[in-house]
Length: 107
Length: 391
Picture (cartoon, rainbow over the protein chains, first blue to last red):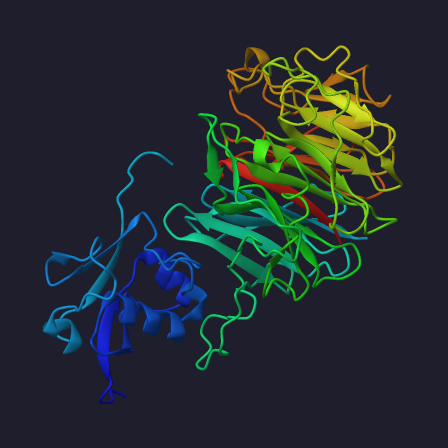
């Protein structure tokens, strides 16, 4: 339930993380305002603790190297994680996308 | 004892194969964790339904999986998927943090890098799980970058045994081409405080006090790729094994050379003997004959496939030096696969079964100590590990 301090944020997860959490392609979590990649992922990991360490390094909290964060056509991967995401994400109109890098052919 | 369960870790998931004591007809279930690298799975000697699996990915990192029903269902310890109200705080079952505290031995924070500089220790994955002999909730994890971790709560949390990295030579350890992994863990069945481990490319080490203090046990190893061929550390040990009835007798497949020690690793002696090549990765010992060994010779360190495209297991009934090829049922032409370090195992049925998996996705069993072989599965992803449970 959305409260004054939180926003219902939609987050799209890559295939393998959906399987780990046993969820569909998109989850909705209550992220702290102002909504950022950090607050959204904090909410994802709180709701789905089996994903802790799979998106961000367990100790440093840094983005894992082969994952990217997109929202509203923008790449937030290299921005500070506390950067506020577009209003459309906080309003639930657009999702935060967690995307695995393409690595064709190696394995 | 009525059957066997074979745990196969592959590049793209886990497979569980089961058969009765005849080991002729097999059921294969999987892939579990499809698409993930399963470096290793191993069952608890104290509870065969308890199995630990190392699920890893270059994208998503390390996940520890556990089964309490013999591999039918799996969950992350402490954070079962699908629970509506997960426990809080969540159990850190995927967290492997190197111990940097002053109180526990001042463990190192850097090791030698390829260019000779010091490089921070960085956790990458679990290479090997070794459940303790007598308690299913106690399990050791060998990880890359090399360190030994222990869980006493069934994998819900992990702590490093920092005396290994901090014992004195850690700053000189250097990764091999496959990474600096701690890949072999053997707990002395008579004395659980005595543990042997091996690291590529640092060598073999032993503790006699449950992991507080460690010593290198590499005397007798010679590695001609090093400036000092007899150095205390730096040897690329590929795998070690022992017979549980004689835990002071160790066998080793090194990068090159097959060796044995009759005094708990204090001194090693080469027993390659008449092997056509003594490069290889795996080694194991017969369940009922402590002097019967198995290796799979690989052509060279530059050519990771069998000689002449013929896959041969070699058996020694004399503890080494005298070896015979075992080929019945194995491909003897156009076979260019490898057998990795943790991809051979034996069962403990009366007629000892020997198992191995290949990078070509075949898993073979010999139900008669190596005399004849038959495939359990032939088209799996590249096999990283094979373990057997005798049920």
